Length: 69
Image 1 (cartoon, rainbow, N blue to C red):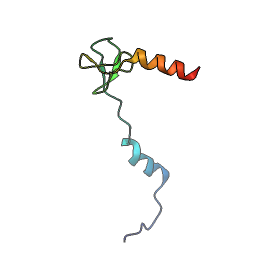
Image 2: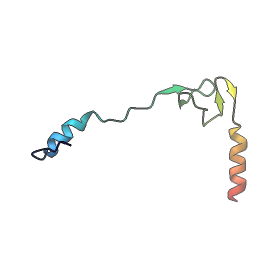
Image 3: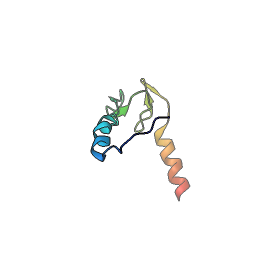
Image 4: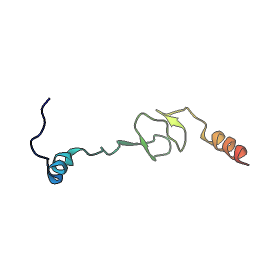
């Protein structure tokens, strides 16, 4: 296995790693409430996906409130 003869400087490491960036998430607008939502996900605000109600968000919030109190 090869071993480096000299240590690479911190600057050289950082120059190499400048391209290791996180990509910004792709956002789309919800067809029902027009809020920004991650693509291919159910809207967390209204519960719609591709124009169909998938999750009843209002009922989920009510359940959560009952549980907390």
